Image (cartoon, rainbow, N blue to C red; front, side, top):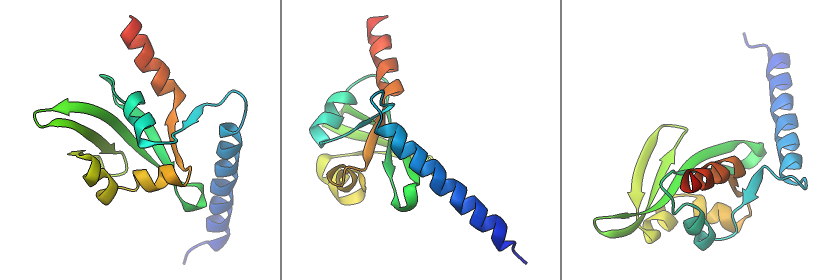
Length: 127
């Protein structure tokens, strides 16, 4: 038999952490950068190292993605790795729209990039 009090306590802790994370995103020293367009995402992820991003799901849960906009034999493509199941793949722009939740999350202001990931990419370019 399941202990429902433990489950309720765990769910409350997850909610509290999600609220704390949301508040952290809203501070003046933002750890996360809200992605406002696919063009912005392409510009930020046009590096040698994938950009660590996440989309905020209902209930404050996150789905982490590693994103890179890169060249392949057939032109520019999105490379996406989904950390939830370690799947990855190359997608064209229309495929990204059709097969992922990333564009929808951007439109709903629920897609963020980790600033530490951006700073690390800048350091690699400089050094």
